[in-house]
Length: 417
Image (cartoon, rainbow, N blue to C red):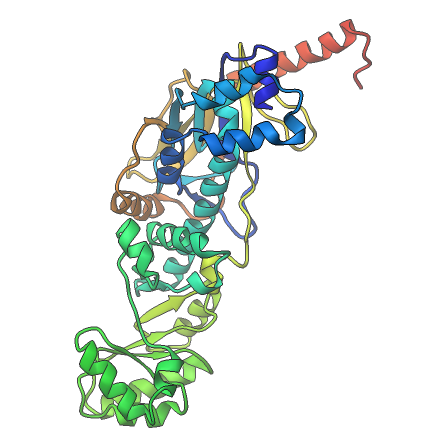
């Protein structure tokens, strides 16, 4: 497309908006995430010599003029970005991000922007649900091994922390993003020693302040008894009937005078299973959530799209079920006297109303700021379905453009249905 734009002399400014058509199943809101990586991509956008040589040699580009490859060699992003800050609660059809730039620059950015914002928003939203289910107990992101690749695991850890998780088992995410890292032990560690007491002793000696001892390699009750008389920060259950076992372990620990030892649970957990455990009275102090979180297993897709809304005037799409509204837009949020959210209105960028959600951005905020925003916004969100509406002015402009499109088709001999 970039080559064809240049061939046609299309170099004017264009505006694209990234939004989600429909909320994923069982989701009533989204937590915006991924803006930091999106901005970094735009700031570093360029084509190196190797990439240009590859394109030049590809058969699809055999008829493209040399001017296009010269253009790519000097390409840098020169546009502006408006976005909802990370951690903002958002809803269907609301622009999460708006890019205005020369059309080639804005178009080339499409795939990366969608990939990073769709994915991290999906994970942050899932994390918020899991954290809410835990009712104040820490939730640790455990999903790197089941994520869709190493980089996905890294970004899932970041997004999960933004969405409310207390930490991650991914050490590189700690180094790169500052996410608190939390480690336990694997069954393989226990199996590498002659018996559990030896394995436990070595681990406690190595990590006296932070050790979490895994109990279910062989027999849970026997493992707890092997810890009697020791200072053990925490123990972990990873399989079996977590409700029954957590009650048994709590009783055995208390009988041994280990009342300060915490119980950590993991093993195919999600928000529904956590709720069931807590409703059943499970004395669990923290949760590790892996596969279900790092893949958002129950709703593994956020169907974000990136659509042209303006170039030399407003633009609309008329495809059934995929209609769009024209021009740069803003999301205005109404609050009540207590600061709770009442409704959102999607309107033209110049239709001032309540609190504007999209702001100009060049550098992302610290992750901790985004995380705090998400926690605060969720407190302000009312129960039930949240009302989102398009402004009357925006609908009027859309209807006008639709009539213009139909009239042009008639003028050119078409027969609009």
